Image 1 (cartoon, rainbow, N blue to C red):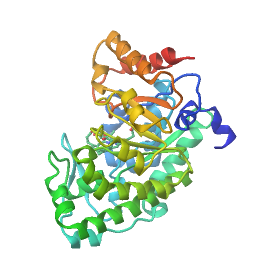
Image 2 (cartoon, rainbow, N blue to C red):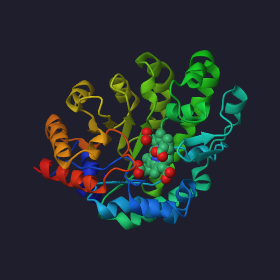
Image 3 (cartoon, protein in one colour):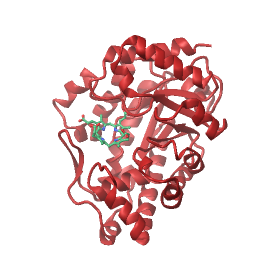
Length: 346
Ligand code: CP3
């Protein structure tokens, strides 16, 4: 770690070093709950904003100007590397991502292109450079990607799915295609994360948002080797956060796949997660995002409960258990950030 980075509580906590308070950032902290974001969205589509470095940098900084967050996360999406792989998709209003030609057969998978990040996602790398300049000496910047399983599920299903029927069918019934697919996605993600690190991000998070639909045995056999490959491909250059939801049955395996920090959702008690994971790993989480719709008293009670369970142990990064929801009251976000700092102050 560079000497200058010793000052950042977030990076110290990622490395399980003591901090004067528990650092906090929020998944999806730049987004629709902010009026500043909605105002820009009236003029530009979501993808236009992702692909314009100045706008992406501006949106990344919106929550930083409002709240005393301990890290910024670059404004982008886990689906961004899929475009240059040769896949067309759009964000349909109210529906989330929609893929016009889902990938279901060997020939679809074979057509996928391995990306050259410096050429293919130069807008993202430029946005990272702009934000790093703005944040120098203030807080660190996190880069991210989706994990192989979560990205494969979007590509195969063509959007969000309830039961992952098509994804699991490929996984169970056509091992050869599944393996080529996961191999290709992993190679792209290694390049994608390393390019973000070269551009200046000081930590990375791997989002395996939908992997909780798998049994531990299937995760271990069909997914873990590829998630591990991606995280090994980043090495120890910067701290890595490995996040999933509905993953309480997978925690030990997630740790084996990699990550200096394991991100957990609210379905698991944070002290239980830590006992199971062992104390050689840091933990990020895990307030239910819906708590922010309740009273300040309720938020206070839940924040205290989580901090008590974490016992001030070095290596806790406070976060929500999943992304912040649209319509979350902005003053409650401010209250949350201040409470975490105040109650954890040591
Ligand atoms: O955390 C941040 O502030 C950084 C930006 C970020 C976005 N998406 C912006 C976004 C990050 C880290 C993501 C990750 C992401 N994207 C995930 C993993 C995290 C998770 O929530 O599980 C997933 C599964 C996606 C895919 C995705 N992108 C979906 C399903 C949707 C539509 C649903 C929704 O919440 O709108 C998006 C769109 C999206 N990504 C928006 C934002 C701010 C909303 C776009 C809009 O303005 O309409």
